[in-house]
Image (cartoon, rainbow, N blue to C red):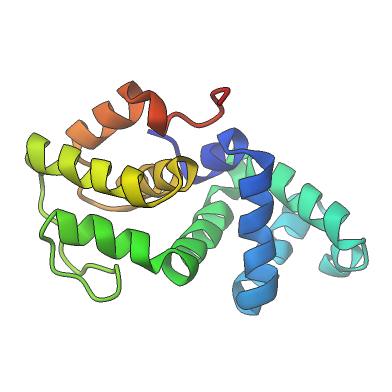
Length: 168
C-alpha cells in the first residue's frame, strides 16, 4: 500500500501531469494550495513557480509531491482529482461493495470486507476504468480511510494489474 507522496513517485509521468493539469484547469483552490505547499517546501515564494512556463511548473510540482514532506499536499490533490474527475470510478467501487454512497463518497465504511466481494468490485473497476487510475484510487482509498482493509492491501501488492511503476 502506497502513501500519497509514494503514489506520485510511482505513477506514470503522464498520469501525474494529468492530475496537476486537471487541478490547474478545473480546481483552482486545490491547485493554488498545492503550488503554495510546493513553494514553501522548496523555500520559494509561490510567485516564482507561478511565473515559470506551465510544463516546467508542473514538472517541479510533481517532483516535489513525491517527497514525504509533501504527503498531505499530495493527498489533498489526489482526493480532489478523484472526487471531481473520477466520480464514476468511486461510485462503481462503492456500489459493487454495496456501500451506501453519494456520488462516490461514503460516510461510513465497514471495518472489513469479504474477499469475494472485494475481488469482484476490483474486477468491475478494471473492466471499466484504466488500470493505472484504478490502482491509484485503490491505494488512496486504503491509505486515506480508517477502514484500511488487509485484503485490499494484499490485492494491491499481488495483482500485477494494480502495480504502479511496472513496465506495461
